[in-house]
Length: 238
Image 1 (spheres, one colour):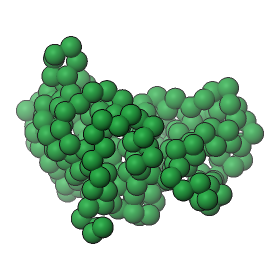
Image 2 (tube, rainbow, N blue to C red):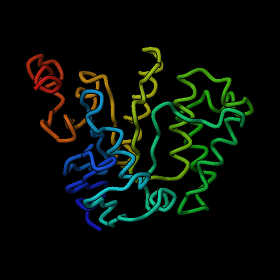
Image 3 (cartoon, one colour):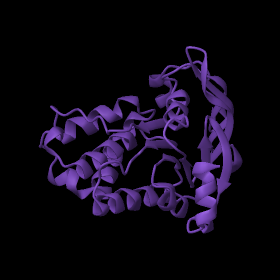
Image 4 (tube, rainbow, N blue to C red):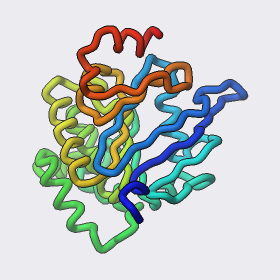
């Protein structure tokens, strides 16, 4: 497989709820080793895009993971094809320990033999998870839970990591910790797709950022656009 085939490729993706379009034939590329942003106003279709890629809601169009079409696969099989989603709100298993949450993340691994190495890598990336490994996940702070949610997703050994609003409700310090980890993750050759409300921050961090408005991609931005007020205004207000 060539490097051009690695990562996530979405072509003419459509999503509708009760016949009402939510995503209108969008196409985007998330190459291996890059972080790609997806921003836009509330109701633009960002979360629907992630959920449809995961197979959690019906969709039309083509979704390729490392060149393989995952059309029609349920979420658990999409995970086994190399895609993990960190959902909005984190959704850790609050009554289970940190370590048990991480173990559950490994259920979808394609290579079971790599479990110990994956766990070591996650605990090195997020030392707080090692420190609190026996603590119930529900007792962690919001930032610590987000680190756990990302770590749990990494335990599945994804080629593509998607995150829905990873900075939501976090302190500035926790946001920095999360995005420093995402920088490391893309440096490991993962394809990272980030849905965020923090437009300027996301544009500056990501290799490329798509603007979604009313279910359609209206702009594609580069990091140098992050401080361009006119561009940001156009992105959200047209």
